[in-house]
Image 1 (cartoon, rainbow, N blue to C red):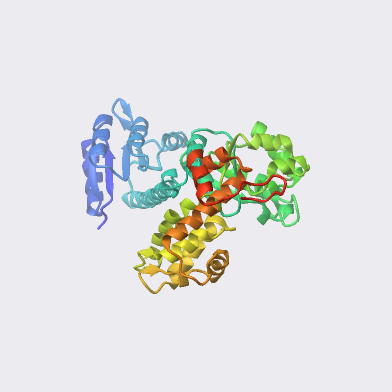
Image 2: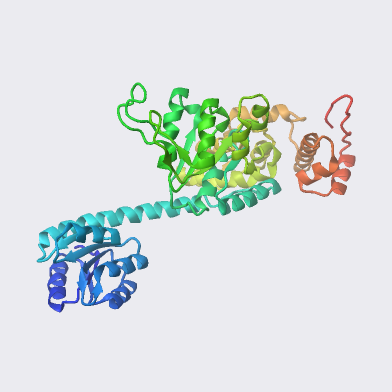
Length: 463
């Protein structure tokens, strides 16, 4: 039996009873109203999926009722009932938000077909909304797994960027999460209901980049058998991520600059000027300022893109994020693999924390995923980790092949972090202390007790 809910808005009692009886005999749950006010009240009492609305409701019009009902329930599929079969009536109904219309006297077989199609659209829209809400939740900034001051600063910048429509340049090494940051900004912005599209520029042959971004007319190049819609056009009302923007050829940088300035572009093979309301986010693992100085990237385009800069630090510079990330990935893949893996051994975690991560978060996630797959206990052990990681960890250890106490492990980790912070800050203790999230006095104390020597400017040796 069909349990879908249908609201009938009809001021003729006889017509209401007739429609209601036919629909209830088909298994629909039916509610009805005679005017605009009672229709809205019924919708609030029992949200319907379908509304059958008469075109004439005494002094009221069914068009206004449809508009009001859609405000109450945007997923509603209204169907107009009219005694006036004309193109003008149909156009009016569709503009008001009606899914379709049917002419009196009602052919109930035809009405049931229209209702079936309308219900299918209703279900599809509900699924899309559910998926959208899932994406918004998945890419919410509150789901960022971090414990470091550096990533807290990134989260604050993301929050500001999501409240703006300004261009954003996201920088960082491969695997640091630039795509995740871009998606999180989009789904927290006013454009969240619009599309999010991403183009990885190096993955495209140079001859196809222009048509992929801006579209192409039929016959614009060999193989262009039909008009192609570009990503700028397709992302209208939403966000476009240009990933690895540093690889964009110079001749296309001019066309992108024009779009950023005027929001105008032309398809390849056409002189017609088109407009698109698209927010542009760009990401790169290259040093664009260096590329500008070398003439490989336009300075004016760089300044257009670099309105808000979000620089993602590599994982080796925020090792305090590794334990919570490990926990997050462990739970994620244990659930996927349906395995009762509840933790990680101290030795295995120590190996993960000490690894330099040239592949950053992506490499860490892959390591934990593999460990969960190979794990035969309720806890990840060092032997479950990728061999390349364990070999590197053993090579880095000053005590290869020996058991090391937790106290010694903490000491080694602190020494490593202090050295890296001092090296990154050019030996300036105040800057290194800020990077480490401790006071300069505490840093000086640690340098002293660990016997770390200051960097020698002449020799160029790190502490």
